[in-house]
Picture 1 (tube, one colour):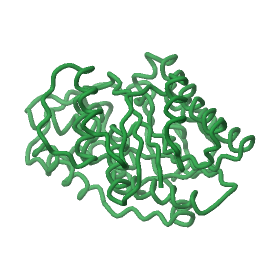
Picture 2: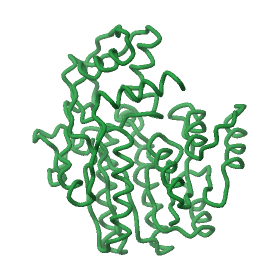
Picture 3: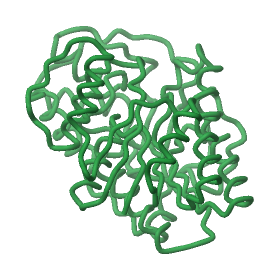
Picture 4: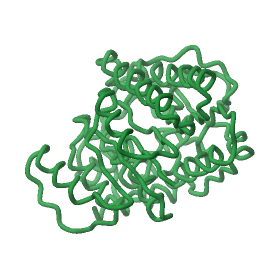
Amino acid sequence: MKYLVTGGSGFIGSHLVELLLKEGHSVINIDNFDNFYDYRIKIKNTLESIADFSDFTFSDKETDIKKLTSLSTSNNYTLYYQDIRDKKGLEDLFKTHEIDVIIHLAALAGVRPSIERPLEYEEVNVRGTMNLWELCKEFKITKFVCASSSSVYGNNEKIPFAETDNVDNPISPYAATKKCGEILGHVYHQLYNIDMIQLRFFTVYGPRQRPDLAIHKFTKLISEDQEIPFYGDGSTARDYTYVDDIIDGITKSIRYLENHSKVYEIINLGESQVINLNEMLSTIEQALGKTAIKKILPMQPGDVQKTNADIGKAKILIDYKPTTDFQNGIKKFVEWFLRK
């Protein structure tokens, strides 16, 4: 099969690309190496995903990405340095390649930054996604997996969160863009028969995790004996999901689409193991064998109090089976962090 993965050099995307290539599929990776964090991290992700462990000498961003593109192009893998907001650039790519399924993971991520840059989040997460659907319509591509987010639930009072719950009250621009993506996705499904699964990810962690996310940030700061920013009293809680389980959910969603028609589904992908901030920090401390130095700060705007996935639908529909509990997942992450 021929897959197009947007954001294929990111945290989740690089793991997905790695697995698809190991399974013998052809993969086109679109990534714009956004300045949200150090582009060199994405280069390393890309090299790991294509099993290229040669030494890469860094220079400047443009030079490095050109070198990476030439290194990583093969018969079954092609990397494009491409922004999904650029519809003409995307169109040229679609003209060049046959595509069976699109897995759309690219997005401007982060709740707090979206409050400061809401218009940019709309441009990427809404308009950029619509560019892909417009091209699906034009090129008759009818299978589409899309990354949504648990943030669409806002401060949902019903626990656990089910796909049938009302999600009309997002509390950040990021969450609102993801809700828009779900709604507009349904429009394209209805009008143009694009089979689609929207996956609501619940706090994904593991090797290659973005450095701005709490687990990675805490691990780095604790290992360096620096203060960690600790928001609130530690009672906020998240349904943490190990990246291998998320990849399992994505690939099973792909298989479901390939074997079914007239599909539009929204599916939670979580662990159903809710860990509060105090427990999360304690688990990292134990894995590192070090004690954190906490800088207590007030709760941040846009942060939800608790997330908890009802994964019953995922279990029934796609046979989703998360297998990594939080303690083992953190152990694996810390081992990766210490050797990277």
